[in-house]
Image (cartoon, rainbow, N blue to C red):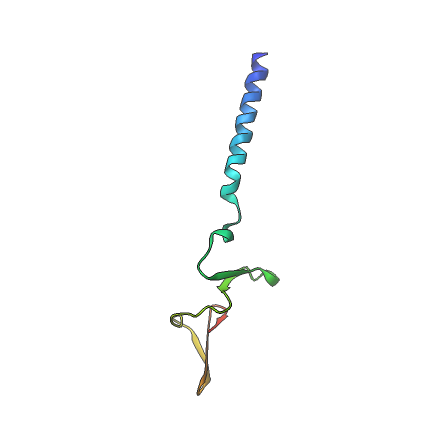
Length: 80
């Protein structure tokens, strides 16, 4: 009788530990709240600025496209 009780207790403790750690491995993207949107369409799997986001400055290394008053910059898959 004692080995069965011991085995059952260990099994319940292991199950409790497994259930307690499940939220730690939850979706990491849910914790990101810096004005970025995760795009998983077409398996891009990349964060982009949210629509309407105003960047304080163009990222270093951005490529300028256009001339005159129409200037756009491209960096890391994002147009500015």
